[in-house]
Length: 335
Ligand code: FES
Image 1 (cartoon, protein in one colour):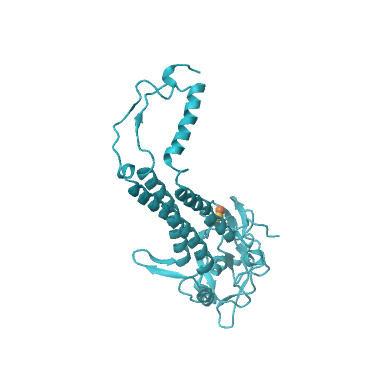
Image 2: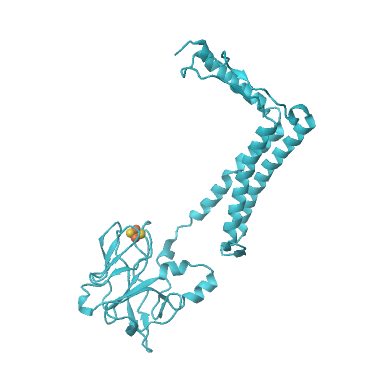
């Protein structure tokens, strides 16, 4: 610890830079106007936080709006983003305006000094802090103080309200997909029904869906069912299939598996026809489709669920039944 007098706050060499007075320093009415402007910004932040909560509760998560340049966007996401951004912006803008117009703006130059501080210096720092508080006017200006406290108190509320999106747990919803006995298998995008002869030996259909998905998506207005129901189809010679999760689950060597990786849910379609391995691009989990869809490499802890298939009277591929295992990631307990 140094007792060097240069470590004191008031050091030889420290000097004030010439100070230009602001209008708010000399005109009490200008100071009051600035005070009101700051308070209006803090109140605006309070209103933005309230708007966030109202939008979260009252705007449907499925509502969409078309905006120029941006295009189609969820109305709730838009409102929540604007409200939380505005709330933060107004607190920052109010604080800057307060500092520029009302806080002390006298600058001093303090020459570099020893890092160690003696007791006198610490006392001086504490005194300086109190002086800063005094000069900021926070104690003298209860309007600013209270509106700032209100704005700061309400800022965490949007984050707390959003915790609601963490629950409830999906329970059985994660286990159920649209696949039922007789669900016709159609191609993604074009919704064209698939016949066995559409898939050559060694071939892959990288994305297939249940035929009634389109109607359900139009009714529900979201893609939740698609995310669970997507499957891939591969065709191999029947004697290349070493084992299946469901007895006779294939149709003439055509096998259907969930397209959703059982690790963290990436869609998978990297199929190596020679080895019958399916590789997930996200973390390289590899599934052997000729052997139960078992995991042979990577972080996934669960095999890829198989969908048993057959053909209907018109010769189109259909599901024999729904999935017998939950599809998708295994990050919650599936029992
Ligand atoms: S999501 Fe497929 S390996 Fe991680």
